[in-house]
Length: 471
Image: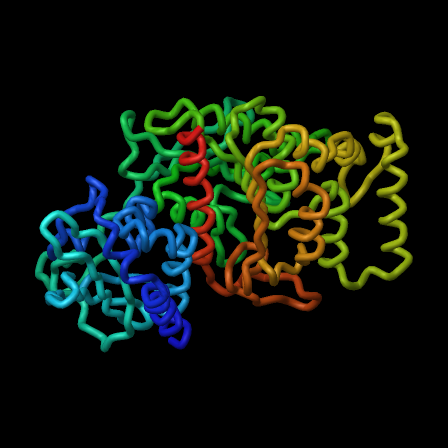
């Protein structure tokens, strides 16, 4: 709660350091600022806690205040607040009062939250032709009962609260054709239409035979991510990995295992009604992140950007070998040395020689073929907007080998790149830190994608739409 109070104080300071004359002189109001009453304030609060149209909400502020509180700071206040309050449940009581001395009006709306309820103090100018927002403060408040029926649904007898309507729809789809077709799901925000298109994302798996939800133990990262994106107005396709449906074969390459289905899904999403065809984004996790540059290159302009999660600027073989060693703590120094030598030797082999080798229980050609593609070189060549993220508690990708190394190798050669490590998050961008011996995650404790991380990823994707519009 200390952090929440600090946020409130920070907002007060922002207003306090502004020259009074600056606010007074700002009298040119945007045409789309609504008249503020109980209904419009409630709608503002709902949009705000759901992270919807943040640029529109920010635009309701007085111009001078926006100069002192940039959009990025406005978004951060929302993110920081939920660390303390938990998820939003419903809107509560409402009251308002007028401050005659400074020609303003304050609306006080209660927000029922998972951990700590807050009162939203919504203050705006109260003049004949000017009612722009002056401040929005969140102050800890006593808990109110849920629900009075105004903002949440109840069952037929009115005794139990039920969840409000889901903001998205999911449709079963098929990626590809027989004999390699795989099942998938299209997740579409309810607001999407042919006249109001939304960006879309393709989710590409990590190592291993994973289902469409990327189920690992008690976690379902891709289902969580798809739903987090949809709540913010971003569509997605996720699908079963080919090795999950058909198993591995001795002659399978990474093209058959991963790349082909990602390209098919991307083309399918681009043609989907309600999707902005100029804003299809590739999201790769682990192995999917390693391969994202190659997939984007082969897609030849299909993808407007890449979001790479929990990965390194290394070859697939190097990354998989490090995970293999981590998963097998009984390996002695000699065995590890032999593995390292096999990596070095593979770089000098011909295709024919590689096919005669077995590396990490796979045919050597599987890795040899991937060695022909340099992830970093491709990133520099295609030069599309890229967001590289990881958890700071990722046992597979230490920050110095992930975010820091990408910064060293790529940041000065890719025009639009953002790198971020999330505090306390693991390889799945979740808080679950359960492990077995050797620091290998078991994921046997149910956990979900962190709410604020999901929102951050969605905001980046939505930012691509704004950027393309500006151009």
